[in-house]
Amino acid sequence: MELARHRLVWLSDAGWQTLLPQAPDAPSRQCLAHWAREHLPLVVTRQPPGDAALAVGLAMPARWGRRKLGLRVAPEHLLYCGGFPAAADIATMLPLAARTPWRLLCAELARLGVSPRVHGSHGWQKITGLPYLRAGSDIDLHIAVDGDSLADRVVTLLQLGTGVAGRRIDGELLFPDGAAIAWREWLQLREGRVREVLVKRLDGVALEVL
Image (cartoon, rainbow, N blue to C red; front, side):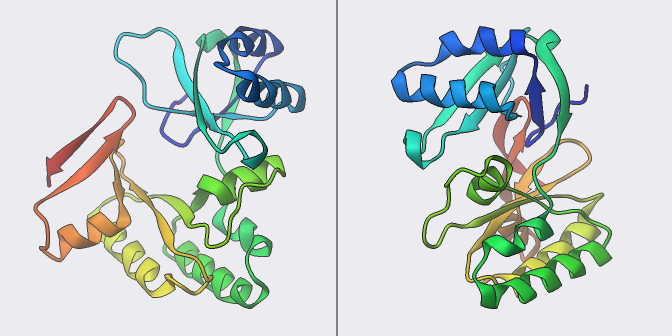
């Protein structure tokens, strides 16, 4: 089973039984019990070196305090994996006036051959049906690109699209070697405004000169 940042995983019932005792407090226990009962996914997080268990987590919704919860699960308890919702699928979550511009932006990105996905508050609310969004919640995208040229074209569209949905568009470009770079930092790098950027990988985070 391929693991990567922003990858969602679904667990067996036995896996959930190993996770429930890891909850640090009552709200976390209630949240995890709901996740187990509804068979909701967890997201792959940064993997500590040398740890046989898989590091996973979830963003707790408003009713349980809006915290991030980190957990460990044995790989044999994973049933299958998948991805966050496609960007176009959150159109109905946006203000009415922003839906057509958002769909047009998603269509332009699709014409480049990329498939943007939405994590963060919009992504978790779409998956769970639970309230995550607040007034002005950012739209967090992650977009797999095959190299610098495609990354540049994607960023050009994101610049033009910022604000069309009445939301700030944040997120990362995911490169074939596993590096993830915030699109705004990539823009600064390509414009020569910075020499190094924060690069996130499955096993760590570091400032790198590119």
